[in-house]
Image 1 (cartoon, rainbow, N blue to C red):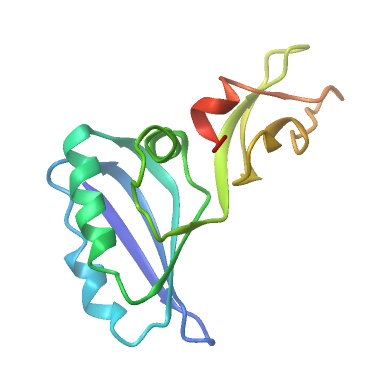
Image 2 (cartoon, rainbow, N blue to C red):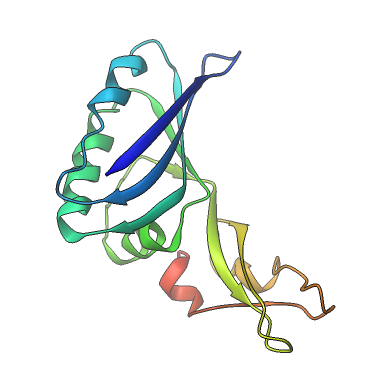
Length: 148
C-alpha cells in the first residue's frame, strides 16, 4: 500500500511524497483530485520500497492521468530506477531529476543511500564520502540504475 503526503507550494506546484510498495493495488486517485489546479506535479519517490510487475502497469496508468501537467520525479529509488531504465517509454513525458541510490564503502563496509542527478554514468562523479574518509561506490551496476 502506498501512502501519499501532499503539499501545495507557493508557486502552485503540487509536491507529493510517496511511501510504500507499488503493486497491483496501487491507486493514485487521492492525488488526482488535487492535481487540476497545479501546473507542476513533483513526485518525491524515495520512500517507495518495491514495484511489482502489476505495479508498473498501475503506476503507468496513474502517470498517464497526469497528462497536461509538468510531472517531475525526484529521489527515484532503485525499485523505480530499474524500471525506468529497463522499460522503453515507461513514464514517458516525465522529467526525472534525481535518483536515491545505494552506496557502499569498500574500505569499511558502511552503506548509505545518496541522491545523484539522473544522468548517464554520473554516480562515480558525485559519490558520497564515508565517515572513514574513503569515497563510497555505487552498490550495483550503474546501467542498472541510471540512463545510458
